[in-house]
Length: 189
Image (cartoon, rainbow, N blue to C red; front, top):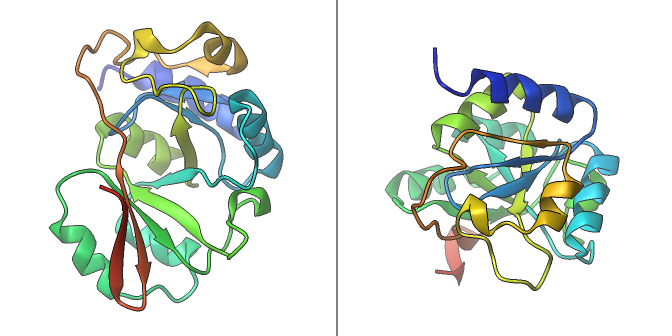
């Protein structure tokens, strides 16, 4: 048994009840919620003091899940995803099945396939995509490790994952690319 089962169970309860979690990802610590629940998504925007037209990233566990949440994706994107080593968020057109307040005005959604063990377990067991936005107030510096997360954020979530709180490895945000017409445009290297 892995050493994060208790955290997974607590997260599942919170996510299923429309709450917010503070959790480690394959990049920086994130504020998460059910990406299909508009009330939960609104709570994240409010906690981050972020305008709701600013998009947030969604985590999925497997490439095939993209087929459930993006209408008619360009299948070449899967070849591209296979070639990247750094965690990379891809902005897709034609998002489906997400909370309306999570989808961009142009119908796009930012998705990252998460390879980190804890996140993969959580997403697979939740059976839905999970929002992942950096654990900071909008416009403030990104917390690269758990102990840099401000108390206001910690107080604003319903559950803080214990797993990896002691990590001192400095994390970086993901690269962000837009996939359109079979071509990749790098938005954040």
